[in-house]
Picture: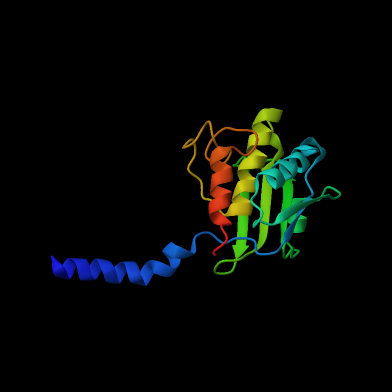
Length: 177
């Protein structure tokens, strides 16, 4: 019994940095959201950035939205966007939306959100997709589909950040006293 407890304690200590670190976060005071999507997404990304700025705690970065001329995700993949969330769309893909994150141990460096134009089924579904992917990009949260259908856009079906999303952002961007 004692040997098992020692082994368990050793295992916990070996993995402690990963367990305690949590997801990588943005450490800058502001993060640019560069929108290169096709016109069908006009207004959705900008509106979601505004919703996130209201929802995010003071310790989180302010998101600074910029609408840029439409560019394909493939063209953008050859460029570096340090300190930015890049949003682009593709004509078709096997996914509705996808977020790629590049981070150091604890700090977010660059994030890409790819939205699927063909899966823009209706404005409500599209708004949920943008919110879902932006939660990944801002908080590093992992997918757990339909876990919180009435209180989350990332783990549920809301079209804007919900109670769970706000609580998770507060936890991720908690200020150590």
